[in-house]
Image 1 (tube, helix red, strand yellow):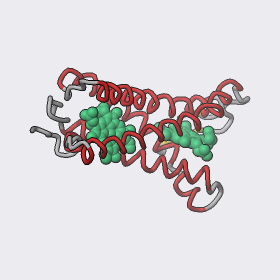
Image 2 (cartoon, helix red, strand yellow):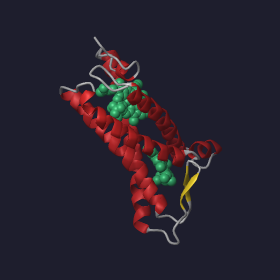
Image 3 (cartoon, protein in one colour):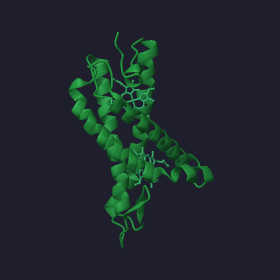
Image 4 (cartoon, rainbow, N blue to C red):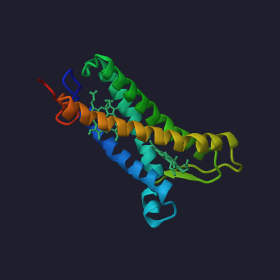
Length: 180
Ligand code: HEM
Ligand code: HEM
């Protein structure tokens, strides 16, 4: 159940791969919104962007708390490359929270009702709150793309560790045990 020196326990692995799937949807929906806005396929994928994003936020908070509880048990990250990986992981956590929160602040300050996961969360303001809209318009998409770039780098490095440097790193997150 808990993480240990040779890998991640069941709960951390479930969080990691469930969120990887949800983020795949989020990345596809953002890319279609960018490239093919107002087409049926973009409308289909982007139709779940709000609910999926709110779900990612909830899971990121729970996963972060679970990560803190397990911090001292997790595999050691010694050396410059491993320390850089930790900085990358912390940056991903910060953006997994900041990107949806900024979008929710924009939605809160908007005039339209906002629903996610089938529940109406805000009913809509009488007048738009300018700074909230501006915050979202300037930062949500940009930081979303930065997060997607970090995820791409993370996936590439997982394969480099495993296949080029012959450190079976991916097994830490799949089987959960990378004992030599
Ligand atoms: C799609 C979004 C993804 C995100 C946001 C993400 C995020 C993270 C984070 C924050 C960690 C640190 C441990 C934790 O807190 O759970 C981690 C660990 C890890 N991830 Fe991912 N990940 C993603 C996808 C992937 C994919 C597709 C792979 C493999 C092909 C992968 C391989 C790994 C491995 C091997 C570790 C353990 C690394 C270590 O112990 O230093 N991740 N991931
Ligand atoms: C971790 C979760 C999320 C990620 C990674 C993400 C990512 C993105 C990206 C990269 C874009 C830019 C697409 C483009 O350039 O056309 C975007 C657009 C958008 N997102 Fe998200 N998003 C997330 C959560 C949310 C949430 C929770 C909401 C609603 C409260 C939301 C609402 C929007 C809206 C309205 C747009 C279009 C306007 C804009 O580009 O700012 N997103 N999202």
